[in-house]
Image 1 (tube, rainbow, N blue to C red):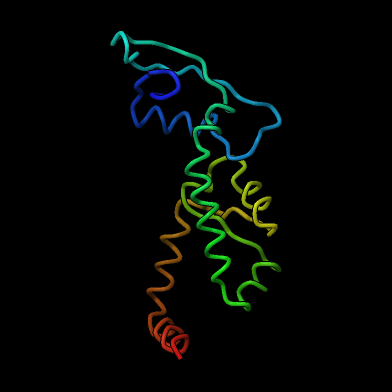
Image 2 (cartoon, one colour):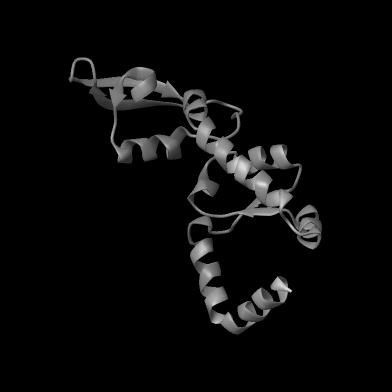
Length: 147
């Protein structure tokens, strides 16, 4: 908003924009939203209308970083895991999984099936908790992968 419109908005407003009209992939029907902030030229409050295409464009850089990380991870992946990914696909978890179309974007870029975790916001914490409950197994797996 700052670069495109010279409009200063808060973090909460930016998050609301991302949730309400943000998308990683073109939508069938693009969305619009009114945004209120402070005009950096005049210092006065200002309201403007933005559309989901503009937000998608603003999200391109972080999305490209995510896609590049996925590509690097897939390149380093052992063949057995690659085979599982072809069969079962990628599961996306965390807050980014809530961005509309992230699954379609990743699927298009990787050629793999992509699924959103049932509860993406807690999936990482729950998975970490399960691993911590199985520390002995994790130690065996980690030591066998070094040999």
